Amino acid sequence: ARPATRCHLGKEMTANRYQSLDALRGFAVMGILLMNIIGFSMPMAAYVNPAAWGGSDGADFWAWAIAFTVIDGKMRGLFSLLFGASMLLVVERAEAKGEDPTRVHMRRMFWLFLFGLIHFCLIWAGDILALYALCGAFALSLRSLSVRGLIWMGLAFMLLNMLFWSVTLLSVHDARFAATTIGASAEARADFAAILAELGASGGDGVRQDIALHLGSYAEIVESRLADVLGGLVGQLIAYGPETVGLMAWGMALLKSGALTGALEQARYLK
Image (cartoon, rainbow, N blue to C red; front, side):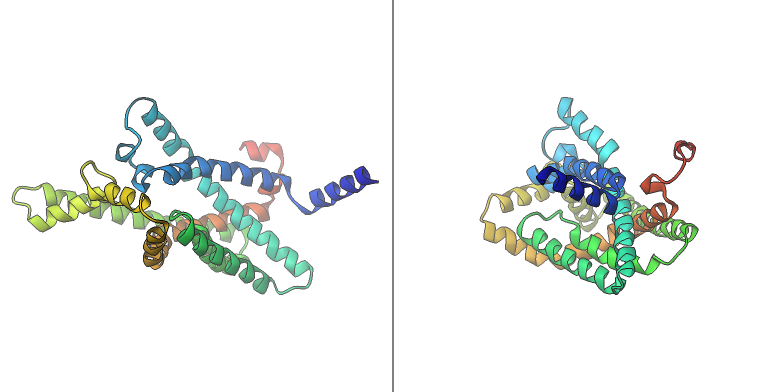
């Protein structure tokens, strides 16, 4: 009787889930781990600057360069797409059961936000679950759009994110020019030095302060996280919020079109 029961449960689970989504989600999470493990084990500056910690030549550099080029952003982007698709699935299934889809979704986002804050304060400062909860709460308002509407809305948010980073990079360029020009003021040089320190420049205080904090007591680490939780969350929303919402919109579009559930013809996938 037991094998039959297991077989019945397996068929029921397969019927209620899209294995393609589960497989893609697992692939994305493991890819994210390859990048996050840098932040787990080294100062956060090493995430974008291999010279900050861990070495910038030989095998160390190539390991960082390949991960930064092939994995960074791509796996998080894939996960964001799947988050939007899964969000739409949950809402549609709640409607099919006669439940309030908005209430079901917001309850899930509340718990995700709460666990994200706990994780950020008590475990790791690079956590983005709270960001996903806030973006997911907003993205619910886009669910009634058509596939074409979701694609265009996603594109608009992605362009907004590109605009933010373009302005940010231009401001860094301006700060560099102001600090290196002849007769640069001490204030301009100090401002640019602070930017370099944040990126883990050699001789900067950023990496030393990060190491000193994490070699201290756990209570000091938590105290530092609590002091930074609001600023960190606002920073994530500004830097990655539009991109995350845009990718969630594209994820909903891909689900509605059948692309994520294997419903399209092979020729369309190849195209």
